[in-house]
Amino acid sequence: MHALPETGYLRLSQIVGKPATESAPAIPAIFPVCKSTWWAGVKAGRYPQPVKLGERITAWRVEDIRALIEQAAP
Image (cartoon, rainbow, N blue to C red):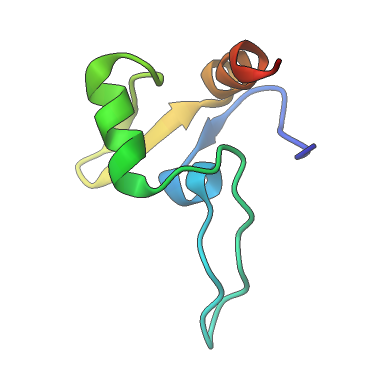
């Protein structure tokens, strides 16, 4: 399991993962879906609503992601 902080925010790439590039290592997915599936789930209410931290910064509360993981666990 991923070591999530107790409180704070996660960006989309930290939630759905990101492949490695020449200049950056891979980020493993916490919730393994693609970005478009994630946004469709947010719109449908299956995934938590984001928080706008700035004009171009969208993030999700760690507490909301923890709740989502617990809900999805069998």
